[in-house]
Amino acid sequence: TATMQSTTFGQLAAEAVPKGLYCLGNSLTMEWAKDPDLRHFVNLQKRSQKLIDNKNYHFCIFSDNVLATSVVVNSTVYNADHPDELVFHIVTDQVNFGAMQGWFAMNDFKGAVIDVQNVDSFTWLNSSYAPVLKQLEDAVTKSYYFKGDQDPKSAVKFRNPKYLSVLNHLRFYIPEVYPALEKVVFLDDDVVVQKDLTPLFSVDLHGNVNGAVETCLETFHRYHKYLNFSHPKIRSHFDPDACGWAFGMNVFDVLAWKKANVTGRYHYWQEQNVDRTLWKLGTLPPGLLTFYGLTEPLDRKWHVLGLGYDPNVDSQLIEAGAVVHFNGNMKPWLKLAMNRYKPLWEKYVNYAHPLLQQCNVH
Image (tube, rainbow, N blue to C red; front, side, top):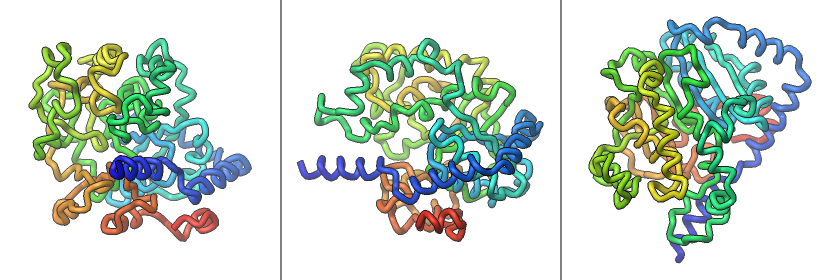
């Protein structure tokens, strides 16, 4: 149908890396390779005690998009009362590792410490430990994600190769990646921060692991929307009317996470879903299962959603929002972006930067 076709084209456009961003990545990789001062600066940052000091405020971002990650860091720092108390833990992939390190070494972020790691160097994260990696090696799974010819009715967005990315599933391994930390705020790379986020660290989670904004003001964002309740394993463990919540701005109590063995719970459900009968794809359904009964609802002003697909998000809600989220296909770095929201993101991009000019990023 025409609707399906336009959805497919929209999806393809959302997955394509714009030329300017591709050029920026290449230019940064070259700068990183030839400039020993950048590498020296990064080596000094890696030795900073702040990286493991729980008196600081720790944020983690897992992304392969340098410009998007830069906006998240920039906007968080710009709106912080004490930016020098912030620590950003970024994980990217091998392809973008040099570029990401180069960008954060050559630009000023008001004294915040920024550490970039390469997910491909996490030797512990392998298919014998992580069920999702074992499944991603499976030919049937790959064909389902990439060919998408089995079931024409299955939502195109769920076959986005993004869902295959190890970076996308890294959110379930935060205590393994940061064993010394006690509390972290997780940010997706398609958010913009508009307020000081440090008060989030003192919100009482009442012993829960995950502080998140609930999304069931709209009735369809309940568990039955994401999970297959005709399956006995789902039916016997979960309430179909339980309220859904959002990934993208989450406070994680890492100590409570370890105590509740949350990663073990995630592994259990991921293994149960080897045939994709509990849920189709993505990280939210296993998140809803893993953090069931361990999620503390936050005030909705902390996380305003929908700027990547909904043209009618309430202006007052956006203005009051601590974090606004471009979830959906219309990302602010794409031509698809909605003009109404794009300035919220562009405010934190320095278009005068020589590399952005050189790569015609505008």
